[in-house]
Image 1 (cartoon, rainbow, N blue to C red):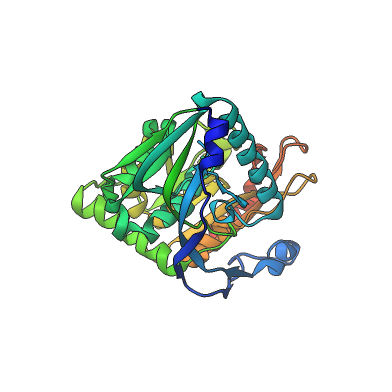
Image 2 (cartoon, helix red, strand yellow):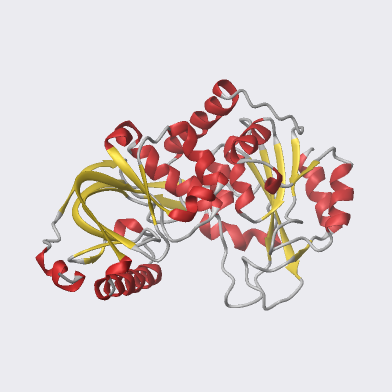
Length: 365
C-alpha cells in the first residue's frame, strides 16, 4: 500500500492541553545603565514586553518534519514555532512541502506505528541561543514525565556537543533520531509550546534552569575552570560577524584584566563552569552571550550592537532582556559596520575605541 493511500486511513486526531505555564503578564525592562540622549530612541520604546502562557499539548496522529515542524489535519500546529505571522506562513509552507514529499516517496516517510508517546522540543533554528533558551525550556516543562516519553531529535544533533552536553544532566533514557531528509508520523505526541515571542523570558523558569546546570556542573561533575571574573568573548574564530579591530579592543580590555575566551575551545559543560566564575562579560551580539545565564548574581554585561544601516536590519533585544531577567546590569555600545549592506546578524563591526574606554570606565565606576 502506498503512503499516499495509507494517509487516507489515518484520522488526524484533535489535541488536548495538558497544562499551561503562567498567565499573560507585562514585564518592564530597565534601560541600559549607560543610556544617553543619542541612543535613547533605540531602547525606550521597547522597555516592556508581554510574557504569554506556555502550553503543553498532547496530540494524536501527527506528522513531524526532520526540522521539528508538526502538522495535523488542520495544518501547522502553531505551538511548534514562534507566533510571528511571517514565520508561521514560512513554517506552514515548509511543513506542507515535506508532508507531500513524503506522501509521494515512501523512503521519506517513517511510520512510528506504536503506542509510545514521543516528545518534540526542537525547531528549525539550529542555534545555541535558541536551543538553550527555548528548546531546553520546553524540556524543562515536562522533565518530570521525560522517562515515559521518547525524545525526537534530528540525527545531526547527536554529533553536537552543546546538544548532547546540555541534555546530559536530564538523563534522557529514550531518544529517536530522525534521519536527514525524512519525516516521521507518530500516534501520540507531547508538544511543549515554544515561546510565542523569542524576545521574552519566564524569569522563574530561567532561574530554575540556571540553578539546575550550575548544580550539575559544579557539584555533580565538579568541573571548575577558572578564567577570571572578567571575560571578553571573542568571535575571532567564528565564521561571521567579527570585530575587525580586535587587537585594539583586546589592548584596552587587557588593562582592565579581561581574559579573552573563545567558546569554541570548550565543551558546553566546561563553558558553564567558566561563566559560573564570571562577573563581567563583554562581547559582540551573538549566541555566545547566552552564557550569561550561568554567571554570578549581580553580574554586568556590555554588548556591542550594529547600527542600523539598511532595511534588513532589525533590533534584537534578546540579551538586553535576558540580562534584565537575571537581574544583571546591562551596558551597550552601538558600532559601525564595515559593509553597510551587511545586515544586523552578519555584519562585521568596528569598535569605537574611545567610546569603549568611556563605557568601561562607567562599568567599573
